[in-house]
Image (cartoon, rainbow, N blue to C red; front, top):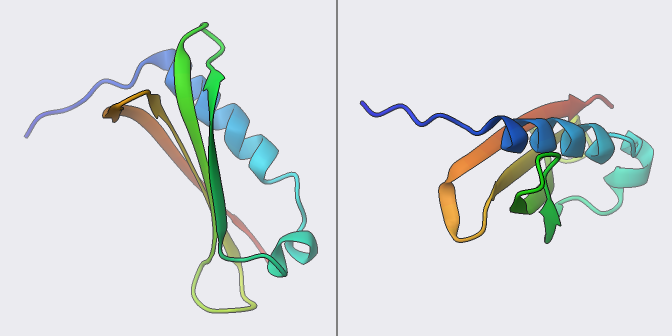
Length: 89
């Protein structure tokens, strides 16, 4: 089994993006779930990257919200960092 080493700047970018993604409250998010977006940005190390953010119901509608963040190199989905966190109801 191959193990991919995630570059530190992608991991740091994913951590920062997850913190920002969780700034919104459950109440603010509950009316737009499921929702996601992506944008091109720059990691703390200056590397071009794609930032993806998704909000989905963790188990069912009107419950906890699962926030997923994935930061990866453009056109390289294998070199990326994924983070998840729950926003409790």
